[in-house]
Length: 95
Image 1: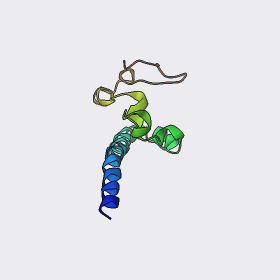
Image 2: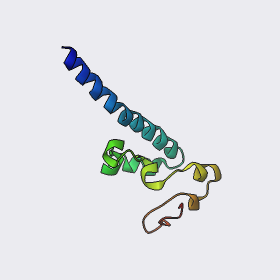
Image 3: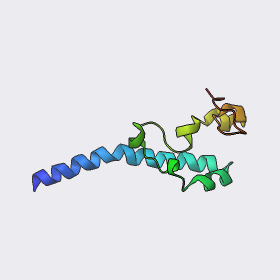
Image 4: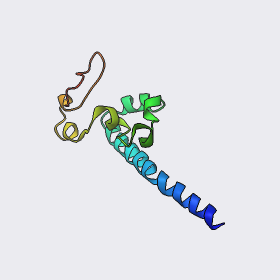
């Protein structure tokens, strides 16, 4: 019985960082949704928005996982301060 409890404890502790990063990604994504609600709503069910931190070696997930830190973009409102993709995007503009 004690061994089983230890195993359960180890599994739970190992899962905590992933749970925390998932919560952080959801919070960060909701911040992005304040200005970009249609974009966030449109990608919620896409595979790349369901990726967990442990699946990408602990790197950021959610919007910042691809677009980078959006703090400066939010503070200044400048589209050039966030990494964008696609025909109307600037590629690696935030780097």
